[in-house]
Amino acid sequence: MDISNKTLALFLVAAIIVSIAGTFISLQKIGKFEQASITGYATNYTGNVTLEISKNASLIFTISSINWGTGSVAGGSYCELWTNGSGFNSAGCIGFSTIPSTSSLVIENDGQVHLNVTMNSSVNETGFFGSYIAAHKLQWQVLENETNSCFGGTVSPSAFTNVSVASMASAAIVCDYLNFTDSKDSLLVNVFVNFTDLTSQGQKNATFIALGTQIGT
Image 1 (tube, rainbow, N blue to C red):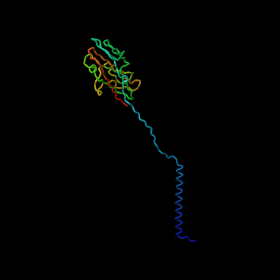
Image 2 (cartoon, rainbow, N blue to C red):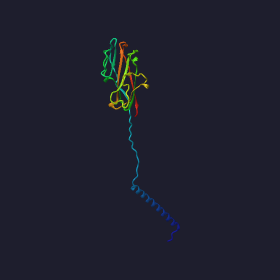
Image 3 (cartoon, rainbow, N blue to C red):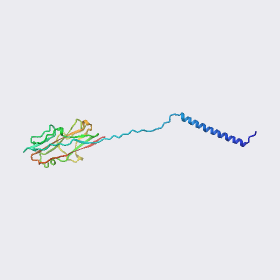
Image 4 (cartoon, rainbow, N blue to C red):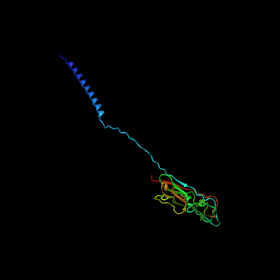
């Protein structure tokens, strides 16, 4: 039987279609097989751990007042009041309390950073007593309250010195490196006053202001 050219052409087209379809199906199967069998693919995700540490600069007076009470001065004499040692009062003092060093003013660094500490007074001896008399004294002395409180620094004044009434910007430096470790973080401020029977009567008051400036981080 003779097959026409047209019929042959149709067979050829059909064969090509079947061949292409078979190739496509084979490729799909091969792709699925490779996806199922090939290992080593990875997906990258990130995990974060975060915290923030804060530190505070804080300076307080843990003992914030000295009060010798009410008294007078023997005629023709003078009165010296101290807070160091045994709380000595001179013989001319009548009725005033004694203040031992354990009751002196105490400055403490209760933060978590080292501090440069300056201090000033609201008044000098003339302002404190209300008039000028050569014998009038209002003085302070600063010491470490615990060993190495002013760690690696200088405590000043270590001897009784007239109080500073400078502005805080230029106030006296009393410790240039006050530690924040609890066992060694405080300063002792002793006070000495001297007055006579000529000093005016009335209540006398001075306010000491301490400022701590952070050092380092």
